[in-house]
Image 1 (cartoon, rainbow, N blue to C red):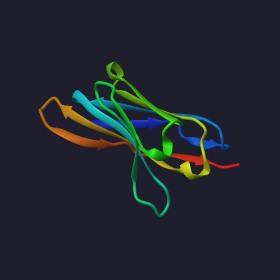
Image 2 (image 1 turned 180 degrees about the vertical axis):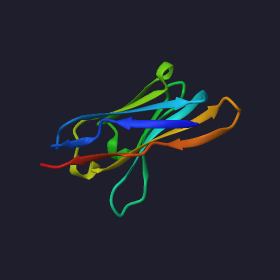
Image 3 (image 1 turned 60 degrees about the vertical axis):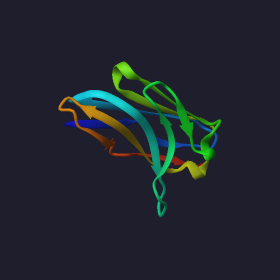
Length: 120
């Protein structure tokens, strides 16, 4: 059993900042790539940022220069620092992780989602 638990969403004014956290727990042998996705009402889920176990990062063009993804491997935790937030960043944000479990299986896991609302 593997769980991803997110925290840190909320309501923020345009130009403000939020930091999302996501911790993986359970029968984990190795956490491979981790990432954050978001889904706005009526829109498809899209990749926001991703980070490999070695620390290589990738960002959607819409968030480059404003968002920063990081991870602490010893804690199986990934973070998303969001600065200069815009109303169009409003969405449910989901954590994703590619995890190898102790039995040897490898799968994608998702968090439950956390709402981020950017509004004055």
